[in-house]
Image (cartoon, rainbow over all chains, first blue to last red; front, side, top):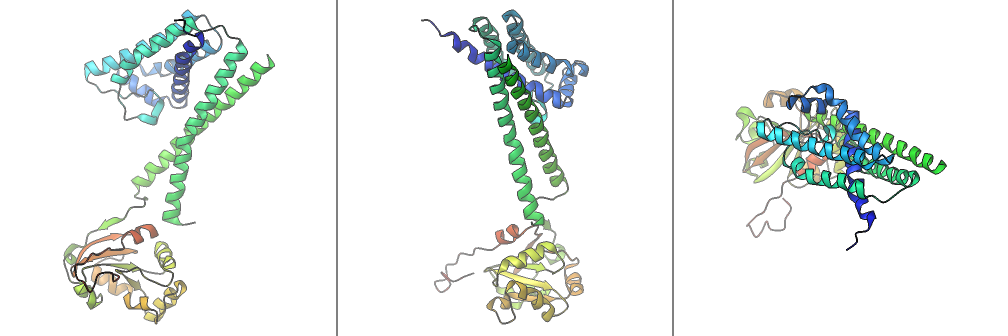
Length: 174
Length: 189
């Protein structure tokens, strides 16, 4: 059975969306990732490098870089995340995840990163099967994905504002 | 090419929004943590009754009817306290069943002058559940002066006290009493 080539874009776009979210959150606040790296016994200075690689993989996909580069970056990141989780579990350190910045500081590196490894490898493999696309098409998808991420990111901010306003009204009136 | 640039600009704007919404969500999370740290949340704060626990309400200078009450709540309010003013303003001429007010004032006239703004006059039925006490007397009997303060009475004994941060918490204290007495069934508590 012939699989439509457009299907291969799905895991790639999803992986790019996850990396874009994670990379931007780490750029906004590097402290949680530095703590995670310290917990893993790695120099916290690499806190600059991780988001650069994550966002670099996204830019490679958007820019139409050769699949061995963009797909290789996806696979490299997936293996790195899984290795960090395995190391954290084996040493029993219970290192904080910081996968998406400071938002989920109570989550620990562990099984989710190990289970996600095949998905990262799938996304990396799918980059070799992507249909030909123009810069314009890739930029359109990129714009839609960033817009969707911004909309999702707005939800906790709006909820927080509603909660803060309700608390203020209850306690101080007005 | 122009379309690609346009898409790139949209993406850049969306990235900016993403970062700003992230910062905003974090700021609200900080506000929530600071409020929790300083106890500025809409939750009543327990107040230790000390030796007054299990005492009869009349020992505290409260209405003698409360000594035989199954479940009633007494609220201490004064006109200088903002939350007390909001509670009194919300009464709209009546006091919920099972609730009593102790207005901290120098005289009944002064107390009803304030309560009159919310429709409670000395002649209104709700006035039966209003007590007036000067600040120094309340402080002498309770050992402190906290307003608005709720003291819960169960079976004629003072059981617990808490300070109320909001009007909502005042109404959440309205007691619901179920009775097996056929004459009392359906009657307001």
